[in-house]
Length: 205
Ligand SMILES: Nc1nc2c(c(=O)[nH]1)N[C@H]1C(S)=C(S)[C@@H](COP(=O)(O)O)O[C@H]1N2
Ligand SMILES: [Mo]
Image 1 (cartoon, rainbow, N blue to C red):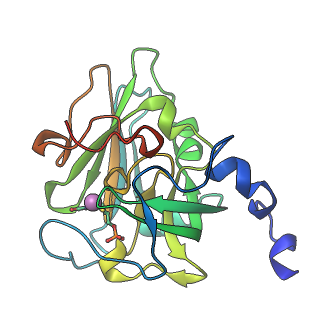
Image 2 (tube, rainbow, N blue to C red; image 1 turned 180 degrees about the vertical axis):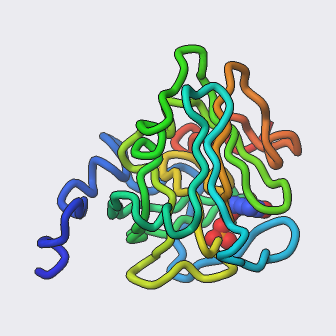
Image 3 (cartoon, helix red, strand yellow; image 1 turned 90 degrees about the vertical axis):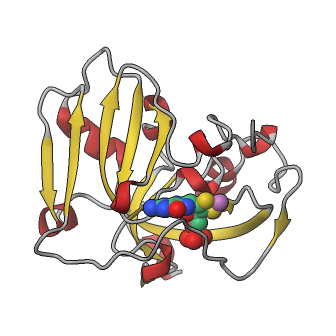
């Protein structure tokens, strides 16, 4: 199969990556084959001239990538399932992009850093423990099922965090801020669960 020759292809490890030791569909979810679009606000327009991706906060060196620089980073491919808090799950999404741990390895994370605030267009944020972003299945994706990410799904770049409900997977991402204290994000301050583990049905609080 052509796919198996691709470097970094994780299809063979899919079962472990998707759901270690558990049934694949988390409680209260049903499978959909289409891909619903959900977000607050409008779909931002991408301008390569002004786009950047910044890593800042508790790091030894703050980094700023232009679109071209970001595209030059080492790439990975991950197959994972989406679990949305509104109860749909979509299996076997083939993502391509840059692993979050690849980016974090370049900034020199300070020992005090324990959380990451993910920043996206129009002030959208979501918060995650640092270790969640070091997970091998987490990436900033620009490609889905072999095609550039659609505008409404986060073009040019979105985060994908398969082990959390999908609102943690910020669309139109622009950076990561490392912090010592947790800081609830856009949906987290609006009643969504801070941890968002689908296996434990951590939907709202
Ligand atoms: N920037 C941004 N990212 C976002 C959101 C948003 O409002 N703004 N909504 C989240 C929510 S609640 C969900 S369910 C998913 C939906 O992603 P999709 O439209 O690609 O299915 O995006 C997440 N990422
Ligand atoms: Mo959502």
